[in-house]
Image (tube, rainbow, N blue to C red; front, top):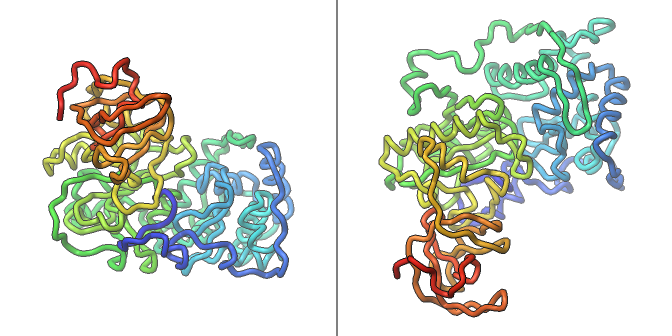
Length: 458
């Protein structure tokens, strides 16, 4: 998703005024204090202390608190920026029409929402207070509170998932993390064998339990069918499918699925992929138009990846391989060329404000996997950072993407266009790039002459 949740309108900045946007200004959140407290600077060592303190203050097992935080954010507060579902901080305290954990935390702790959103120890304390209140409501008291397995129902409630199977998806992941242990951002929790007490969820089939109808519903064999709200996509299409879009969700797997099932979200994607094991959930049929890339929804298939643009830890080998297999399957079935002109990031489409999948997404590796392990070929290397690739060989041409430097590129041909003066050079030759589907000035290509050797004119 990149920056905010998406709806099919040209100006996505308008989303900042709506709860469904996933990018509410903090002043729009319910506040219980006239003067917001200033955020407290904190480092990795403070995170561990904050978990210990919150655990003791609210009598919540430390391993439960840490596992919830790791499942939500990999223990990263993302500088106070919101998730696609309007969740804040490493514990993902949320303020939307279905999840009130932020306002609950404010009432229980007496802390202002600005502080709960941006200050890491306060965010952890807020989540501990909410979990404590849920445990109290379920009758969990005394020594029983020390048994992490007894917290299953409280954790499931913390997710505010739209249905039982999605709540189990969220909570089973938290308990998987407890079993595996955590070592990240200065926080260490040893692996712990826990027997989850499912309570009311014992009779809820885990998400992914296949039925005859769910198997028939998916376009991609092996995907889990879990449909988005019908309020979040358009039935049918008026354009041929010719492109596949790579997104980063700005949130967790279970949280993204929950958001797409929320009728107020006004956003969806066809597929969602899990970081830890590459599990694939399909939420919108390919024949229908998911709302994931604004004005360009009509001809694309959207794939959301669990995680955050600024945190490469989410982009696992399992995720890359699973996503590449899905993309390869879609491309083969629909006759879509397996190249960067047809497999693009959200930020590479017209009329976008998003940055996903961002600089941490390894396009070279991904495209090699998409093409069955065959390494892509390149013939030149760029230099400089933020080099713009334009739709035409003109400085007025629409910017398609920006290249970090150095970047390997494949130049298919070259043509004369606007004169560019940069890096002490003057050049009016432009290279057409195979994978980016546009033109860049030859000034930023590592070659001795203004016109590239061995490359034909366009």
